[in-house]
Length: 169
Image (cartoon, rainbow, N blue to C red; front, top):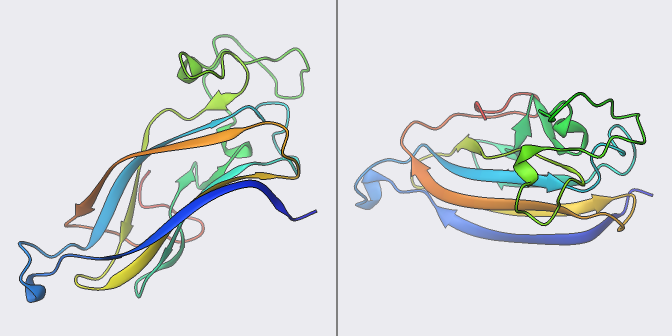
């Protein structure tokens, strides 16, 4: 009913390094690595149970989501197609996965995952901006979805994503 469930988020304000502020370099962006896992996959691809991971940037340069895969926001549907060990149609009730990215995660063979990706976005040197990281269930609170974030750092090149194109995840 349009209500996110099992919400988990955090946000922070951060100031991009700038030579004008006495920093060692101008930062025109940032990068971070992420992985996305969901037990909703593959049974709930293209349904209202489309759990999501969003990283929302609010800055002078760009306001919006910075995490995309295959030019889609990071949802259960974006996981299709992933590399299964064998062929599997997401409408097949006997399809239980086999995604190699799940090995050792506790998901066993229930669900799907992205593996590691790198997100990139742009900011103006010296600007203070907000980043919010959120993962939540859509339509139910039965199956779990997880996101892992690692290796956040400043980027001297940067780029400007939009709601249909990422900065090259």
